[in-house]
Amino acid sequence: MSLKPGFRSLLFLIFILFYSSCQDDATLKPKETKQKAIENPHAKYLRESRLNKQFLPRTNRYTVSQALDYLNDGMNFLYCRPNDYFLESVAFKDTFPIPISSSQISEDDLIDLMDDIAYFAGDHYYADGRTAKEPLIFNMNQVGSPSPSYVDIEVFFEMEAGSPVSTTEEYPYENSWLYARWSGEENPECNEDQGSVTAPALFKRDLRKNIIYRNQEDPFYLINPIATCFDPFNFECTSLHGLPPVGVPITQFYGSVALRTPDDILDNLFDFYIFKNSDNLDNFDRCLDVDEMNFYYESMYDLALGLLPSPAGNNVIAQIEVGWDRFTIFNTTTIWHSMVVLQATKISTDEDNTTPLPCHCH
Image 1 (tube, rainbow, N blue to C red):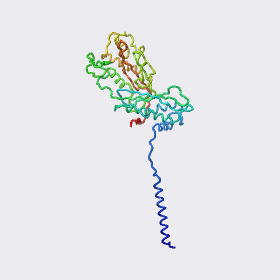
Image 2 (cartoon, one colour):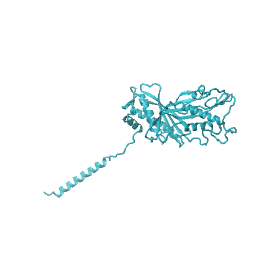
Image 3 (cartoon, rainbow, N blue to C red):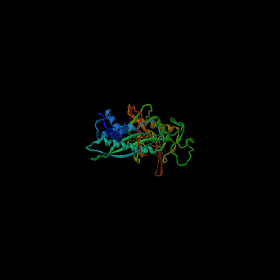
Image 4 (tube, helix red, strand yellow):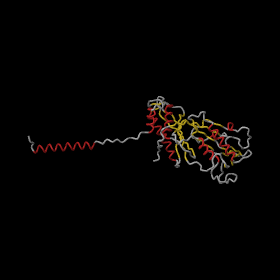
């Protein structure tokens, strides 16, 4: 049976309208994309830690103690691989509240806290304009008593920056070196070629190079820092304002009694294992001769390594600070330096790459 011309035209019009409608629907439907979302590094760390059974629990809620375990391992694992030597350590501190319910912290809130800590560290890190720098360590602790709704977490972040002093003189020393320079003065009694370098700068550089743990072949990070201070004047370690140079609270202290050299009269010559001179005693001098330079270096070397247990296991010296200040007390000039030694636990890892710190600096 043949279709009439008018009927065929009607069918063709219906087909065109149907086809056009399908094309419009196809245009209106968004094409599916397979764009991969960038996973939050802290969420990824927590998920993988549970899968690897690195810590307990295997849930998405944590006690404060468990959350601190994740914080201290995770922030250092993600951001810190110390492997070089620097001129200076720079530390920062802040306190962050985190919600708590029925004595537990939710995973979402823990991730948010890790985000906040990372930005806090990154903002300080990138604000330092030096190119030679790296994150050293994070340390998180609970402070105060938790309320029913939140707990305060105190956060320490320490970075290192700057190239060490470049003088060729190193231990064992063969020259005398000025301890401290008064503004604009000449130093005829000491090494005339030393420029602006002083004895404490050499001590710090050489102790760091010879004692603190760095290994570019074996990736690692540090946790559980402990700070010990040695101070022959019984002053700086106990009255520091703000952060001590190594960034965590000093928990062990060795003062003048513990640092006094045996069978020595108080005359400014080898009185203590760490340098101290006072102008109300004989032999006051800011120029350390060769014997003094080597004596104080060797004494500090022994004091620092003596903190490690035997066998040391994974306990290492993470950082050393030397001679960060000098004081003039009343009518008596007393010059000296203290030493702060940072111990920590070294965690070896197969993962050498770290996550770049984020910041609000864009």
